[in-house]
Image (cartoon, rainbow, N blue to C red; front, top):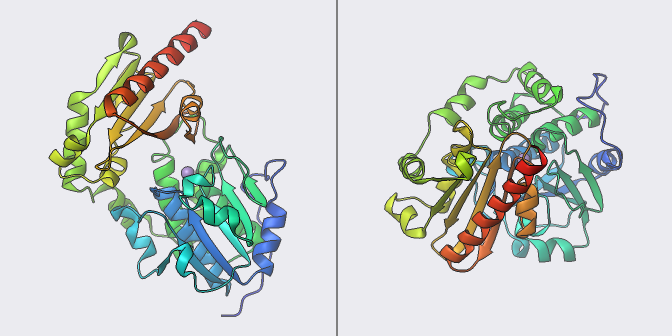
Length: 347
Ligand SMILES: [Mn+2]
């Protein structure tokens, strides 16, 4: 296919934030031929969507793109990477002009820290997490972007790379899932504008929305039911906590990925009066995962970072090694004391 990079004459979604190296990144992508894409471990819709969207656009521009992912895509999003050969750092078929890490706040979050930090290829970091550590040789960090998919769309348009319904499809999925269908608080106009630009490509949204809304798996609904029946309230109903053991998961026939795809984390903060919710779960290998969600501007990223994790102000997570009871007590105590301090400050 004949392709020439023509800068888009349309207005950009947003000017690139100061300090970001978008111009240099675009030059590297336009000048390069071979790229390796990756994203964070336990990939979500935004991670899979931004990888698939950028990969499709770069391939349509005549580039070679390979993908490595530490964990397989969740079942719901797997169709976006169908027929995709998945590589590991040990069996990569070629050298790369750049490695592009999407939607990952740290190198270790990719699960490939050693490979990425030792690799001699140009490392490009494209992300919207406010805890991003600017680990790339080139970094495009936009903390105000609703999703990494919004940033990839911005990049594709700025670079003049191909944008059609096939490229728009995964980006739309990431937009929908990372904004919780436009329910996040305080999003920029560019979040909504992103949806319009993707639909303008001719993208038919019905099939994707149906996949997202009518493809729940039984273990997901069972887990959701168990979680909703079990969460505890603290601090006069301003905080909710839920602890799920590996036995609980087994009782629902659920694997770890079902916990992330079942929508449980945001349920307790939908209860009137709840400001912060924490869900703590143990995988069959004994690893303990903590997910924090908040509203009203209460910062849960701070809490996640204090336990070695990261994320966004209103949605963050961390993982820990140790006995479930002890680990969860410590995390719940930390959330309670942060909330007490926050309530005092905002009184
Ligand atoms: Mn994201």
